[in-house]
Image (cartoon, rainbow, N blue to C red; front, side, top):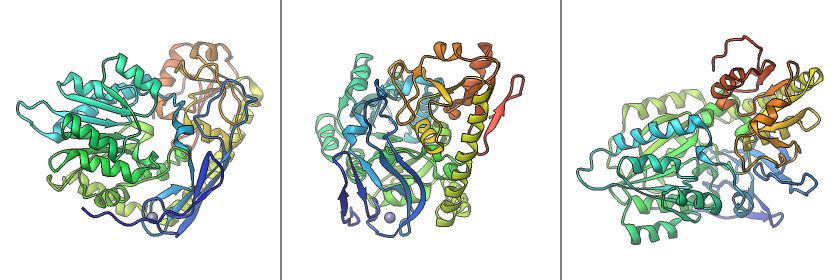
Length: 433
Ligand SMILES: [Zn+2]
């Protein structure tokens, strides 16, 4: 196996973050500007006292003219980003439903193992929601996740999980203890990984010659087509397409053989890889051909995305201001994405009185940079009247949330910012995502 060379040139700006001057995957210095979202606090740095100082870090998307991977320039210290990580996989109903589909797809792709007990390792396994599905199918599983509070929760619920940042060293230790894995899963972690090279080496080492890897990532095609500029936040370092992720994996000897769609983040994909053991499927061939036509690997596509994002954010801020004149506006979903959207658009506590989040770990805290109190669903709904409205920040769960709001008798307008053009859903309007 050969690895492409890499030169590290980094400028240390602060203890908390560094600015990369070269491409994170190929080392080229040909980085072209796409969209500067300004200096923003790390999106998950929720805090209990809004007076507490926050570091503002450049949130700047650039495009590598050589390997064509859009990426961020700033790397925030992973300890700063992940130590207080409060996203829990099992929270959303749609995510739990998808965990069953995901398991079925992987079981089919792996094929029949006869009577042998299969072994699956998940990188950044969070609360173990996805691993539990494989346990139900009789697989042996092991999760690896860096957030101690979430690991404790997973272990207590019966999912073996190790508290660590996954890398080559951890992969080798797992192999010594448990043997090679039949499947290694990395859901929405590769695009977030500062140590991407060591993680890829770890995955390649752990599946050996016979296993498969499943890498899930927020699809760059959907990001540009539907203006998901809110998916740009400090943790999300890389914006891969099938073409660019396949090319990256090839450097580690891993060849893509299949792909399937995921509903996560408003449109993701799962790329399946092996050491050339498997034949390329028609699904992968046609997805790659479609991507070649879409222009997602062209710089011009990304500059147009940057301009359209600026116009969208300005129009959204105006719409929220107008809505706030009529009555209280409550946000829905205190995610990393909502942090980017509100900070970029300049929406804050002057317009939005509270943000609902169903995760009890976030309630009682304040949104970073915009200082809006995060409240329970019941509390947030009690603030709403017939005027004013809901700003549906978690638009990627719009079906589930809208249905619940109307079922609970919420009659005010609901502003759905994305995908694409924003929409205002009035009482009685038919909603179709
Ligand atoms: Zn590059």
